[in-house]
Amino acid sequence: MMNNKLLPLLKVSMSGNLNLFNIGKKNNNKSIEVIKRYSLFVLLTLLLAYIFGYYSYMIAKPLSEVGLTYIIIAIMSIASVGMTFIQGIYKAQGVLFSAKDNDLLFSMPIKKRTIFLARILTLLAFQYLWNLIIILPTFAVYAYLEVPTIGFYITALIIYVTLPIIPTIAAVTVAYMVQGVASKFKYKRITQILGTIIVSVAIFMVSFKLQNFIENIAEKASSINTMLEKIYYPVAINNQCIIEFSISKLVLIMFFNILLLIASSYLLSITYFKVISKLREKSSKSKYIINDLKTGTPIKALMLKETKRYFSSPIYVMNTMFGPIILMIACIYSIISAEDLIAFISAEFGDISGMVSKALMAMIFIILAMSTTTASSISIEGKNLWLTKSLPVSEKKIFLAKIFLNLLITVPFGIIATIIFALRLKFSFIDVIYCLIISILGPLLTSILGIIVNLKYPKLNGASDLAIVKQSLSVLISVYLGILMGILPIIAFFVLDITNVDAYVGIVILILAGITWILWKILNNYGVKSFRALNN
Image (cartoon, rainbow, N blue to C red):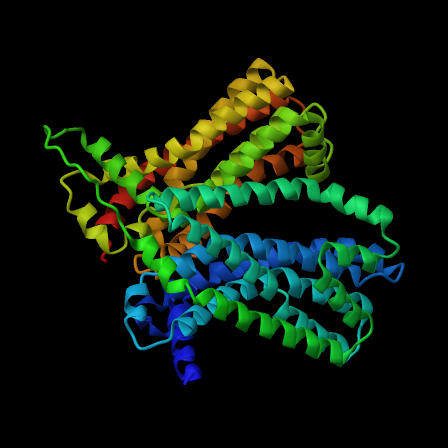
């Protein structure tokens, strides 16, 4: 009976969140558009897989010469576990707690644990797609270097299936605790946001210390396997199965993970309905006084509307505050130890002696480009889009309100980071001016770009805010284009062997300003027409 209800629930949940089961429902007139969308998604996925595969090969090649190729699987598995845990915390809030069909499903004769299990499996489906990009290229590199037996491929399949289960359950538990605590407070949304920010900061602070932690273990460990066991024991077990194929260990791994999944789903589902009900409660003010009505400009009213919608969705806030949080952590790190920050950046991007300010400019641009709110600001309107379209204001003012919100959220962080970096790392006057311009121009450019892309690829029927702000094509394209615009000047700098760095940065800023002006013109022409043509 449970299986009969679980499978349809899975299909509905994945249709809303993953869009894997409704591709065939598109009519023939839209088939070309669908092909374009999914072709771009596949292209970006293959690009990421190639990047992970390339780095896996670069690490595995020297390891293979000393008979330690299997270590690359452990390294990438640990990276996958960490990313699964971080992604899971954010995604769990949308998939488990903010789904738009909660009222419908809870009113049906379906057990709460069946609903909860279906959503856990949906969340796992996200992680399997992500792990394909990381783990599959790593397995391919290992197979290329070692030419293993059939036992390796069986082991690889079991590792792929079981690897995301434990970190996903851990992420769900953390998200569940945050939501459970938030449900007991009057200001639930603020508590959810603050709780998630605290968890995120803690994760990143641990990440900054992880390198030293691993080095200390390596010094004391008697073997590679001992080191891996201390970092994440299940990965060590997987390694043992790769070194020496063991069907009994693989069966034990499968059994343990499935049992853990079922047990945790059952335990967490006991209070699932109660937590969601508490989160949906709204407290009313005890006293209401009639005063004169306040009036304001249309832009101010639209800004207030955009701000309320933004802060009403914790997943929307966290997805766009992710970058500024990283930026503030980097600022704190520079205050505590500027030398370590420079060493960290140098380890990632090469020797930057004499180029610290320019490297940090690029970092600020890229981080703020990843935090644009406008890439989903049209889609997030959902069924209420007709209300916005019916307002007696021009489309230009609607766009400006969305742009101003993004600038209000991102620009202050860029300016604060510039001031801290400038004081701590002793920027020159021209570097301070350049950095301040980048902190304003970058978010402005990506704000306009985000709206244009969102108008091209709107998602007005998302199953939840998570599906809109994290899985929509417009967000994916906007983020990648923003990152690309930050990376291309760096590549050009090294390719062209630039000597006058200050003049080069000035030219880059002028080019970015020109792109911003062109995008604004496109938004005022193509954007207005596209907005008017949108239907709910």
